[in-house]
Length: 217
Image 1 (cartoon, rainbow, N blue to C red):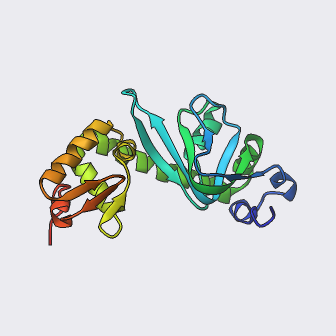
Image 2 (tube, rainbow, N blue to C red):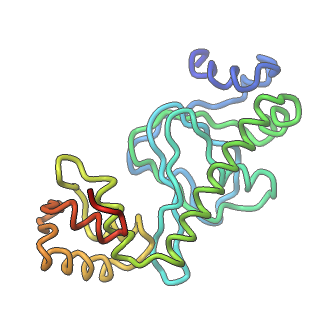
């Protein structure tokens, strides 16, 4: 536990050892639900290792990924809930086995008030995620789905292929599975890619790049 607290002590060098003894270490298996809509915020999750996915259900009934929390990152939605004393509006699910610290609400308040280093880290992390979500909002509102899907495929493919499903892509992009399937079929008919069970293989990355508005070499 002492080693686990090393990063937290670095972020809050003014914190007393007695205060940090209240921090709880948790090991979380992939698929574990960390919190959900309506749950009270009991503290601030700080990820030491692993990945936690934060997502919301849209008004149209579709899931959309807001962001992911990785190594040495905190959860901005939790920060907002701690500040406002409101329940969670989103869901967090462990995507890759994770080890995380839960900083209780009272400890968070003390650290935020007493440590300039911790305060700057929290505000900086919150600002970065806000900027990311503003970009996501702009993407959803103003870009066509074929452009967004093409960009996602190029960004996440490895060795010319991407292990995924139409439903997972729909969640990542905040749309319906049927919309993703329609666009993928269009790409397949154009010879840009082939669709396999649980896999998408890119045949023409230059043509795919042109669908997202990127200049080809």
